[in-house]
Length: 237
Image 1 (tube, helix red, strand yellow):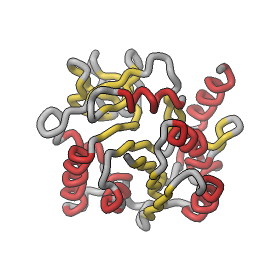
Image 2 (image 1 turned 180 degrees about the vertical axis):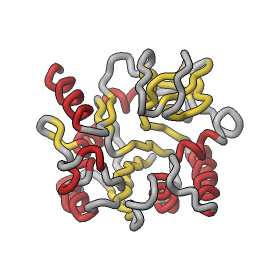
Image 3 (image 1 turned 30 degrees about the horizontal axis):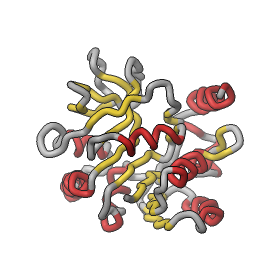
């Protein structure tokens, strides 16, 4: 099993912090977002980590030196990070993604137990869902019988809830997603979400099951308001 951390974005909504740091290196209380992610991976026995980079790649390279005894790192640079979305970063990393995959967006802060629950899921493909939370601008999953039928920021029906971009995929089904991503890239559809490609597979070639948060922490840090919310949540625990 390999982990793929998507950390190539500009993180503009976290300026001025992200003018000098990649978003994954922004500090939350006493640790960076990437610290939380790597610690969770290590505690759950995942040692092979691919990180897609873009903005300020050298800072990520320097940062992970402290973890080199614990992990086998592969960095994949998206040289057009300012003109593309992470769908292109995943495409750039495709040669490394030849295994079961844990995919994590680089702005997620989560309890180690969230990853444990994802790994424990009896289903080969799973994603983290927070039931009864329907955010305005984050990903939501349309859920039917605990299966994800569609992923979008524009879903607001009663069975659509916050979907953390935190996935477990089998090698076979992740390969199907990669092939669909490649189709998008060939057509120069590189500013959309990778989930747009995944939606074409859900319920047809790929089943994706919900793993519910149940009060565990798993939050995206998109802006300063999110950062404060995550900090407050961590300080209470």
